[in-house]
Amino acid sequence: MANSAIPDDILKIQKKLATFEVGSRNYKKYTKILAKHIKTHTMKKRVNSHIKTIETIEEIKKKSEEEQ
Image (cartoon, rainbow, N blue to C red; front, side):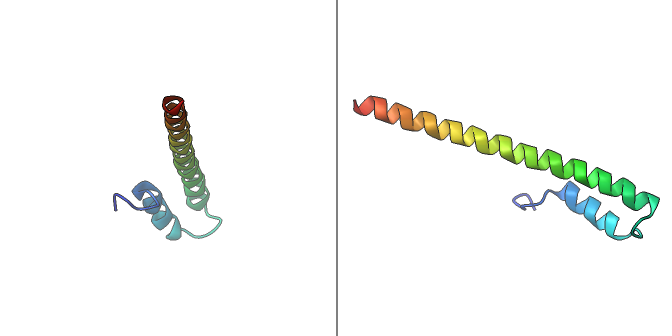
């Protein structure tokens, strides 16, 4: 599952969360943990996307400067 869209740690937390009763103390605890992991994962994806965008813009600038 290396190329999976959802990381393994998030899947593990979701599976564990599914075993708890809604509203229980452990359910609330694991919900917070899951939210933290999802937020971190989303931020990593956003940063990587921004880096790729910046690299693409720099490549386009280099090509346009070479043509002139």
